[in-house]
Length: 308
Image 1 (tube, rainbow, N blue to C red):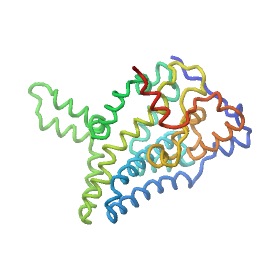
Image 2 (image 1 turned 90 degrees about the vertical axis):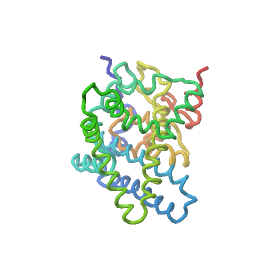
Image 3 (image 1 turned 120 degrees about the vertical axis):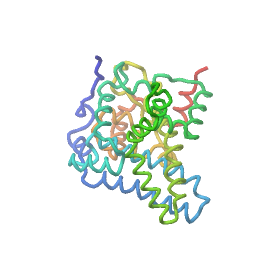
Image 4 (image 1 turned 90 degrees about the horizontal axis):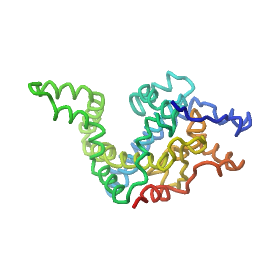
């Protein structure tokens, strides 16, 4: 198996710089998690007070749902908190469940980044695609089809293709058990909001963003990170792409500095809040000229959808 090449931090940073950039914080990661939930809560409140804000609120909440998943990703690298038990507990209960399972999978992606054994290579391999194909994918995202396929597709197929004589009710119960944490958590959330008279808020400003905007920007994030990056790329400075993001893109597409993905692959245990600082230092030293860096998401998507 071809293991992806690594970089030595000391080749790019002084010991003092690296100590600052790699340092864990006992409060910054927790503050980001609190920030994500505060934005969700305030957006829901705005939707109640000013219903005209709901379409924008769906985008904001969907972006924070991605943001919480990104913070779980940081936790998978042990970067959310210096105490690993606190790191994992916060990620499991306040970001996204299954942090250890995700860690086991995701570290394989880093180990074999853009090599044949990379489990995420399937996400970037099809590009470039046609503009029509990209529009179809985005339409599936925004209509909830991607969400249903990813969340319930395997269960639907097992029920649809059940063996002759296999009891349908028992199979349905077994499949519901597979999704019990998701169903219980969202059932409780809907119940609590309904008891307060705001069940529609939970549906419109939590479930709808989860089923529409969140899958769409997750796709855009995946495209920006690795699409059009060469398979079996030997240069560790070009295993992933950094995409410069303006304020609107950070609000709606790329929360919590996820756009600095090249730096993340170079220094995978660096906390996300230090990635912009690392980028500035690398730029000042002339290293970004060797890295895969694009000026914005529009530029990346245009290139990714350039096939004839």
